[in-house]
Length: 171
Ligand SMILES: [Ca+2]
Ligand SMILES: [Ca+2]
Ligand SMILES: [Ca+2]
Image 1 (cartoon, helix red, strand yellow):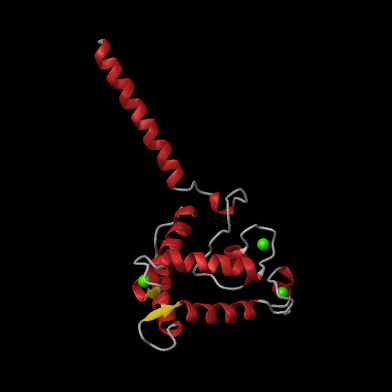
Image 2: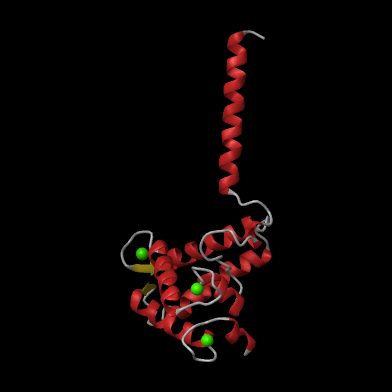
């Protein structure tokens, strides 16, 4: 092998390794979903109930969702979802944000989008219609806060102001 082709091979190998490394950081390895080392809350979507609630909003992962954590995560999601930054969520923006989380969840589980995936997307459209209480086709921060208040209250079954395992036990 000439020195030039050897050098080129080395470059190709390095490029390949770099590609693999970036692949690893983008697509979570199977089993990563159950990892407790991941930063921030897991974001189960499509699932309901208290485990999903705590998994989705417990930012510091102490098993307790405080109202502060809940509001922070919800606000982050709202801002992130408002891709044209007009302060409103359109149905497309709302569903896109949901789908991004669903997609990540499927990728983490090593699953391909299936019928349930499609069903969850459909549900997101239906949900938008319900959340958009004045039916103007957009979701404002006021409506979002209203929803957040109701959702948190529902999840906090024992009414102590936080959502944790005690609320699951009473389910
Ligand atoms: Ca917490
Ligand atoms: Ca918007
Ligand atoms: Ca509670």
